Length: 119
Image (cartoon, rainbow, N blue to C red):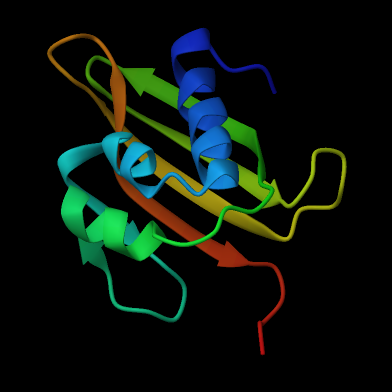
C-alpha cells in the first residue's frame, strides 16, 4: 500500500531511528503525552519514558502499511513489521496519529504484537 508522503515519513523515520538506535529521535516522533503499549509489558507514557524504553542498540526494522486513514487532525496506520524488507511479517502494529500545529503527523499511541508467541 502506498501511503501519502506525510504518513510515509512517519514510518521511514521510525525505521531509520530504530535501526540507528536513536531513542531520542524515536521519542520525538511521538506527541508529548504519547503512549507505547508494548506486548507483555506495562504501557509507557510521555516522551522521556518512551526514550528510556527505546534506549539500546539499533536493529533492522521494516514497516509496511495495510491500511490508513486521515480525518482532520487525527489518523492511523495499521501495518506489519519484519527485520528486513521483503521478509515475512513477524508482527503487526497500529499507530494512532495526531497532526501538530505545524502540520506534522506525530504518534499518539504505538501498539504492536508478534504473530507468534515469543519465548
